[in-house]
Amino acid sequence: MSGLIALFDDVAAIAKVAAASVDDVIGQATKASAKAAGAVIDDAAVTPKYVHGFEASRELPIIWRITKGSLRNKLLFLLPAGLALSAFAPWAIAPLLMLGGAYLCFEGAEKVAHVLGWSHGHEDHPKKEQTIADPARLEEEKAKGAIKTDFILSAEIMTIALAAIPESGFWMEAATLAGVAIIITAVVYGSVALIVKMDDVGLAMANGGRFSATRAMGRGLVKAMPGFLRLLTIVGTAAMLWVGGSIIIHGLEQIGVPWPAHKIHDIASAVGHQVSESWTSLIEWIVTAGIDGVLGLILGLMLIPLGEKIVTPIWRKVASKKG
Image (cartoon, rainbow, N blue to C red; front, side):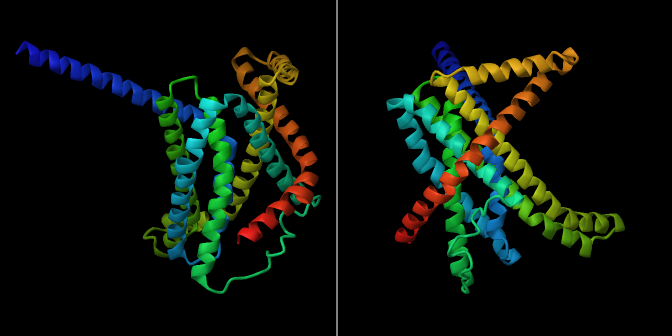
């Protein structure tokens, strides 16, 4: 009997260790996911355009198809690549992270420049005006395009997450990155599904609501969605510039150029100490994020000629050959 009790004690101890490990994985995955906020918001802001123009009945199936492609990108390609980097070339993580940060700055600055009329963005794409008559083929092309875009954003997200994971064992890193992949994908494409279907929900409420308040709420949802999508784009752009600038600043610190990070910290600290102590931390964060965003915008504007005149034409030639 005592042996059975001892066995139960051992099982309980193992269960506690396993539960603690799961908690650690979830906690680390959540923190690492938060670090990738800019790319996540941009992903959620970009994806709805890929279902624009389709019948309402096809919107959720397309989003589900993109979701599966996103999970495949993260779990089958990016996760093993991230683990290999961590194991065999940890020195490469900071430069790759800075490359991803520079891309975020470029994308954000390009959107700003396009709105201001300083850049054509992607409007000059030679295949932009081509239309596809077959709905099934159009759906196929849109889904492929979304999954390709997701791969770039997912690479940024997974690299940021990898850099944010505390030093740990191989399996902990693998489990944490897998957790990041699942959490991010669920948040992004769950949000996209809600955003895309919100106008349909509003229309159903406006036309079929039993109460006048319900119908009024439905009409309000329909009217609010275009403005909400524009706001999401603005927030996504600001987040890209902030996160991209922050990645570059911290990357410079990691490779031995710490003075930009120290200078920003000193400025934020000086401004923060001008207000009440209870607001100091918030003000310091706002000032730091603002400076990171401005620097990200400046870097992105500097990268636009390189991206539009060299990188984009090369990428289009490679893509057209593959096509």
